View 1 (cartoon, helix red, strand yellow):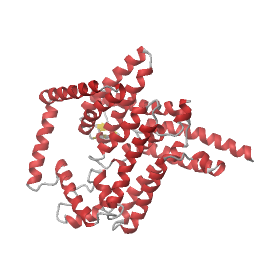
View 2 (cartoon, one colour):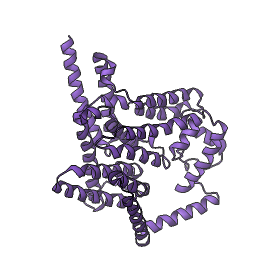
View 3 (cartoon, helix red, strand yellow):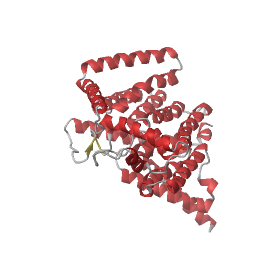
View 4 (spheres, one colour):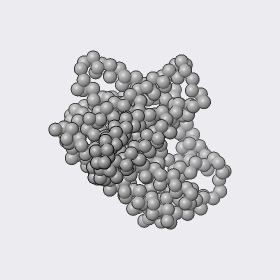
Length: 399
């Protein structure tokens, strides 16, 4: 009986490893397939834990305690929310984030680099589909959304950007011919970042690249050289590319319209939500208004507007955390990034050490422009990468 149980657990482990690789590959393509893989991994992990013991399956790291705290505050927040129906969606996303220790237990050190490669392969395949679409070789009009098929560009840009940083770091240990091929691929990915007009990704790249160069070279002269290079590049792009100039004019126009009372433009809604969130936050600054409470609290503060033209997403994870859970939730949310930065300081022999800092810095920045921990592709990408990069078994891998 014991041998049969071990054999079944071994088979489930192997299946979970395959599912995890498929999970990484499917991130830019299919939300349904991604969550299907995640769900099966969780189910198989609980079956294995029942047979082998919880500690042999689930990895205990500091991310466990954050995940439990994040899920707990979302669960307790249902008790004082004024919109229990709307509470399910953020609670569900909090449960996914709390499942990182489960995904860590789905694979071991032998799968670390394969998992990263599976993620990169998915992005590269998607990337070539995207280029083919822009060249007119294939059409995805029925699936096109925000300049990219399958996935909004505001979520694709961070996935693409992180792929560039992983490849640029990893290729240093490759042979010359593979480094040349990788460099050409990175250039192609950068072109993709421009043609999709993912402005948040472009700005994020301009901010992070000098610090990435500093992490890789550990020389300040390269840091300042990169800053200067980016400044010159931005000046050239702004003066030569119509899309950059057009976007600047649009921001000016939308800001002027917002000051005159127009809250329905893209920028107008963001400025509007900042104002409303601050008013809502001041009504209950310590514990907030509960999980999923923003829609109703918004209507209390701003009851007169054209229904259907306002998106109830404030496009800011910090604002959303403050509204729902007050200062307590805001501190808890920010602590996630400090925990990951702590690992960057601690694991000084990690083969992908710069990524331990790039991931939390990148997400701490993009959470200013959207609720990415309540998103889909960016949330699942964060879960996938956190499960790999902060896995406790990297220590044994190095040995």
